[in-house]
Image (cartoon, rainbow, N blue to C red; front, side, top):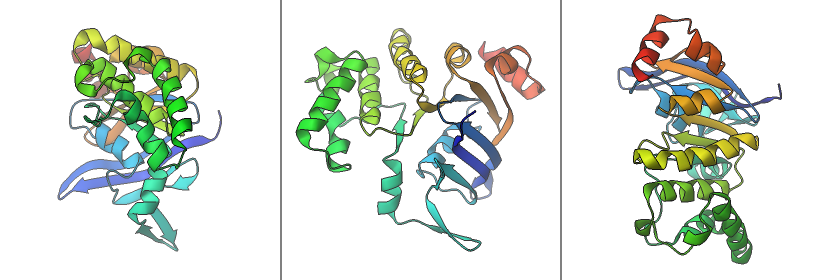
Length: 254
């Protein structure tokens, strides 16, 4: 196995007196696809959002490709990085949200070129060529000049994936990318995600699509009450889970 791309080391987070992440330890290898599953409120999305410092952790550390995220160490103390430096780190960590988060006043093409031009400083002509190729890659060659309101939910989510890929991320995070979609549109988004997994992109996916998790992911991490209860290959987790909490959850969602 290649070196870890993402490392969670004793990561904990609370909201007031409520612990939402409790001593999380997890390593994700370069090119690995891991799915976080578990009941609502188990901490899956919070853990995902900590990877790019959208949520701040109270204890522990997260590194991406060897770089400490959100903080710098001085001796035994961790100091939060200025927002400008955090933004620079986020540029290498793509994220796809459940509600697309597209700019409504910009076309699909404009949505995809926005960050490469304004964050990475890419020349507009080069950004347009890259965006055109990415929109073709996600099956939207005929929708480049369409505004989000003219697109289905599945098409909007595929624009969002193209937008994340435009930054050439080391890691791509998916936070329930199909949960806001009508059932008949789910497949077109999962097909794009399958192709990205096949290309070797490191991905963390919070999902309720168990068939996708079983088929595409290298490992499944089952979370409950802010903890990773068990983590293993899909065949282990789905066919012979070690813990009753996992068995109970899977019996309800299968």
